[in-house]
Amino acid sequence: MVLVEVVALEGPRQQEGQPGGHAQSHSIITKGRDQIGTEKNQPVISSAQTQSLPTTWLQQFDITMRAMRARSRSKRIHRGSHPDTDLCLSKPHPQQSFPLGLFDRLPQELIFNILQFTTAEDLSKFSIVSPSHSELVKSFISCKSSLRVFLQRNLAREQRRTSNRKKDQAAPRLFTDLGLLLKRSTFLLPTRERLLHLGRFITKIFQIIEVEKSQKLLCFGHMFAMFTKGWSEKECHWAFLAVMDYFKIKPKLVDVLTSAPGSIWETEFELRTFLRHVFLSKCSKAFDLRMYLDFILRPYPLVHQAKILFLIYGPTENDMIDWQQLSNPHQGVYRTMQQCTCMAMALKSLYTHPSWSEGSVNSILKELTDCPREWTTRNVAKLLLLCGEAICFNFLVSIALNGKMREVANIFVTLSMIIKDESLQMAWALDLLYKVCRSLKNPHDVNALLDAIPDLYRDLTVDLQEVPDEESYLSIADLAETQAEVMRELMFRGLMNRNEE
Image 1 (cartoon, rainbow, N blue to C red):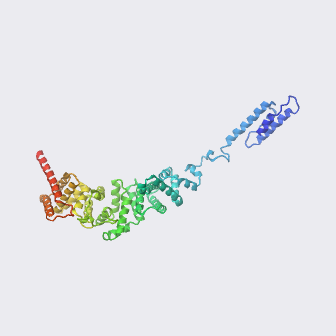
Image 2 (image 1 turned 90 degrees about the vertical axis):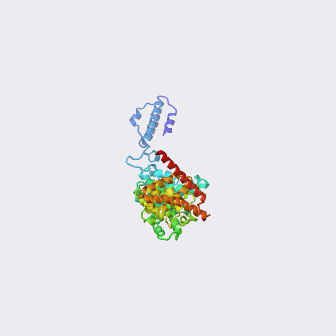
Image 3 (image 1 turned 180 degrees about the horizontal axis):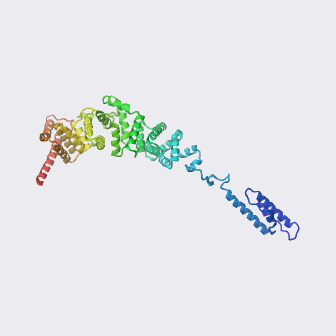
């Protein structure tokens, strides 16, 4: 239409008064008017307006350009609702809602393909944008085929990020991020439903990712610790019971507690690994450690509680729990202080728990040092030293109140030798002895305790001199140095007290 108008305007001009000149111009403009008017939704120039138009070619060109501009303006107005317009330019209806944004315009398969390229941490952030995003992520991790690709890509990414020496840390890191993903994607659900999601999720993960048997529980422990981080004690107890039921731990634990120590050593070591890796080793705070220890020990009687503690923290050898090591005076002494640290930390955590009294901790300590047979005095003294002054004081006072002064003296002498070997302050042992003596109301008991200590030093020296034991940790030189250190501290305190008076 435009080309026709321009050609007509550029045609040969006729002289004024020449026949046919006005008629030709009139016919071309009328033709252009008819073509413009036939366009959809375009303004139409009436016949009356056309007849009144001037006949000069410049005015004709001006009229044509106005019609073209009107048509272009009309196109721009109707472009937003035109059916061929691009999706990004169309405006949604005010009543429509798109909770997922542009993801609502995509099919679910395409959305899942996009989410497969994300990291577990980024996907966890995506899940907390809105409830709709949370539902989308839950649907994604419920799809086994999409979850398989997602996990394989994330595991490969973690393995590339870790060095060759730390390849074993790739899987635990991934499971930590997966725990955060599950925690955030289910944060709107009740606790019991979240635990159901945990069970289904961990089942799918272990079917997809091939994890070594030794690392399987360790990876789940990382995931469980992140998933329950920040929960209340009641919610953590529900989670503890759910995990114990999922792995069927309670029947195995009952079998171990009712059997002789070491008779089912494979089950014993399996329980030890499970309880440490899943619940205890990931406790970064003392509150979490005492909480899970309380969950594990509380349903059982005192004797079984001591056995469970030994099962978890006792010495091992060749993937077996060595029940007799701490009772053998020649084979089973803890050679370093670190080997007894975990057991002492567990006792100190229980001591600070509001549901455990001082008497309860003292009773379980007595049962523990007799499990399965009576420990050597040196092992008992090392454990008491690591437990701290409060637990050690209660333990010694309970023995002294039963009239066993010789046993208290034996523990004190052994404590003094350990303090000397570890280059600790001898004043700590003397302060402890002073408090024990003050707690005894009968002066006869105090004198008996003070008499038993030097007698024990003398007896030990005579025994070593008459029958030297090459395998024993004692030597005459060490015993003499320890006794000299104790006497030096006593003399210093005596002189200081005399000067104060």
